Amino acid sequence: MTTQEQKNLILNAMREVFPNILPSRLQEARQAVLTHVGMTEADFGYYPSGQPKFNNLCSQAVKTLKSTGEMTTQCWEWRWNVVCSEEAPAPSYDNTPMEMMMELEDEDDLFGDFEIVQSTPSLYNLNDEETMIRLVATTPCFGKVVQSDSMCQGCPLFDSCCEKKGEDSLAKREAKEARKEALEQASLAGYDLTKVKVPKSARLHETQHIEALADTSCVVSGEPILTGEVAYHIPSWGMVKKVIGDSYKAMNNL
Amino acid sequence: MNTTEQVLDYAKSVHLALKGEPLPIEFADSDHPYEGHSTEVIQNLVDGDLVKSQVRAFEKGLKSEMEAMYATLMCDTPVKVTKGSMDKRGIEGFILHAREPLQGSGKALFVYDVLTNKSCMVRDSATKVRIPKPGERHTLKETYRVCKSLAPHFTKGKDVVLKTNSSTGFIVEDAHKNSNLDGNGFHQVSVQWVGGETSTHILTELNLK
Image 1 (cartoon, rainbow over the protein chains, first blue to last red):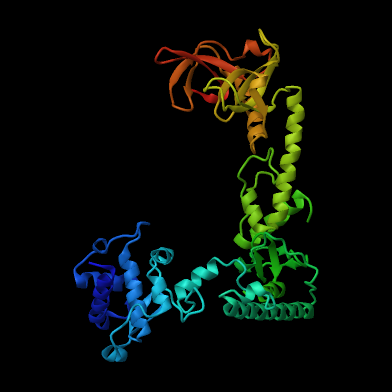
Image 2 (cartoon, rainbow over the protein chains, first blue to last red):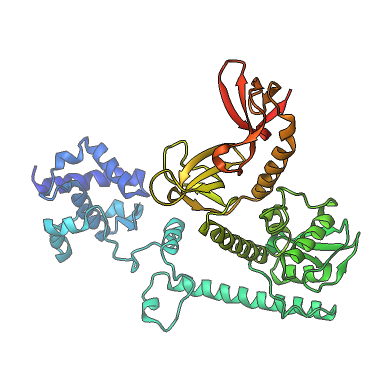
């Protein structure tokens, strides 16, 4: 079977199978074609590089179907356009420069299994949550966009990054306001917390609300905390008066 | 709140206020920055950074004290045996006696571990100085004291029981100090066990029957 005959076989199989199975992922769709024609990848032969010819023939057939409007692709997902498929004219494979290029085996090896999606400017489908998560995870500067930076402007995450930075700065602003308010509250109660150095070890998020079972003192103000008084214990720091504890909780959004 | 005493006092008051009971003691108070109270518990109750730095400073001071003692191979210096046969290597004890070796350079040391009652004779080059564990030097002093006070009671012919495995036997000679240690070390006795074998033990290892 010549390459042209193999291509026609795949194209015809796609026209018969795809209206029933698409939308589907690239690999599954290719497998469906193989099943339909009752052949394996090996039956289509291999390139000298060891890559199976079938994948490239599929790519070319898909390109033809796309050019006739019969199907569309988005990343690795193939979709069948039902309306066009019924009235699609017989495809011509070798009448465009792109298709001629695709017949070059060296070019085929370069692309391997991947479809060339010309309609999408980005390499990544950012609508796909999984892709987005992976991309963000491998981008350490995410959320630190500099809008005038040309590197940032060329980044596929540019928009999301701007959004994230906006959120961050909003959160920072809110935290700052909360801190200011808490400091004011403490100040009204007679405590100046601005100069208090909180030890790094202090586990503010584990602050415990307690009723003192014995006399002790406030680690911040030094005032006595009497038996029965409601106070807070901040692990790895000490006991604090209720007002002070409330202020620290507010400051840290706890 | 700067000194270890102040930190400990505050930790005690916080513990009492939180739990309604005094701060428990874990070790005898020798060689411990907070009189034998658990450092981890104190670290949780009060400024953890301050506690950490105080513990570090305490250990640094203790280390230099031990190094000074080790420089003259003083008795009761804590050491670790780092060379020698497998039964000696790893012993963490105190120097009970140092003397000129029968041959070779340096000093021969008699090292005794009061926590496991293991002992050995090693050359000083086979040891390195270490920081005593919390309460370990207290145990050492107690061992000296108890051995001395029990010595008159451990006399020839009396039945004894070994504390670790309840073996029984009788004392074959009155309690005495090891003659090789020139009056140093603990009072000890030789015991003949029911099985017939004889071994030597310091008095804190035994109970009179």
